[in-house]
Amino acid sequence: MKTSIKVIFTLFIISTSSLFAFQDMQDVTIEIIPVNDNVYMLKGAGGNIGVLTGDDGVFMIDDQFAQLTEKIKTAIGTISDQPIRFLVNTHHHGDHTGGNANFKKDDALIMAHENVRKRLSLKDTDVKNDGLPIITFNDKMNLHINNNDIVIAHVHNAHTDGDALIYFPQSNVLNTGDTFFNGMFPYIDLESGGSVDGDIKAAETGISLINENTKIIPGHGAIANRSDYKAYLNMLKTIRENVQKAMEEGATEDEIVNNEKLTSEFFTDKEASEFYINGPKIRGTFYNSLKK
Image 1 (spheres, helix red, strand yellow):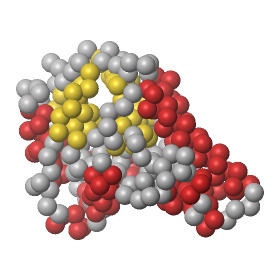
Image 2 (cartoon, rainbow, N blue to C red):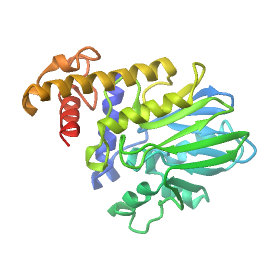
Image 3 (tube, rainbow, N blue to C red):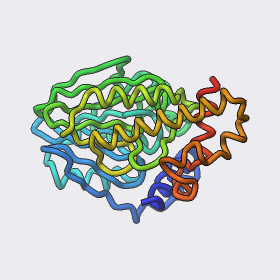
Image 4 (cartoon, helix red, strand yellow):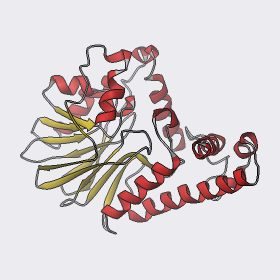
């Protein structure tokens, strides 16, 4: 699992440069994982995809990389004969929005937080703005599709400044985007408006929406439950307390980055060495976020 996580995030980093055009995606397989009722999770290369099927058309959450669009469409075609009509981006990162332009050409209605559109509009890779969301929201949006009263809620300055939680109440499934990394340290993108306190608040918000029977599609990692989500929240809060205390005691950034004890309750540096965000990286992220 650790190796696959590292590969996923290597692809994410590569996707921000022109080198990604030369990467071979032919070996990537799109795996369909049933979640609850007519909700599925798709795994490939990049962030997890959520899919809600029904007579209203396919409702999709995120779309990985452009090179995988045809494989994703083929996979979805095995669980629904309806077109992909609705697409929500949980945030702007390329491993979640890379296929936007392709799905937009197929007449998918793309939705996202306003900051997602702003950040995507700045990308040199989409000079024609082909993949920009055409419907944006600020705090919350409700949709009524495929027998679900879908709740889309913005969580402020969490993984980025444009994150959204998507909850299917009738199917009892929550999609968290990258505000929840299941089974690993999180990636909090400080340069894109993310923050430790915002990521904690996002997890608290998500937990408040669900119950013990809810299935959770995280941004990365396996399907989770409420207990997994609460464990993740506990990790965030504990590391925050540990790093904050060390800072108050006068520890420098280098001392915090190199102090494995601040995070080893959850993953040792050896265990996290194959994560995209390893021990030193997560401690540095918490330091720099709390310093602000």
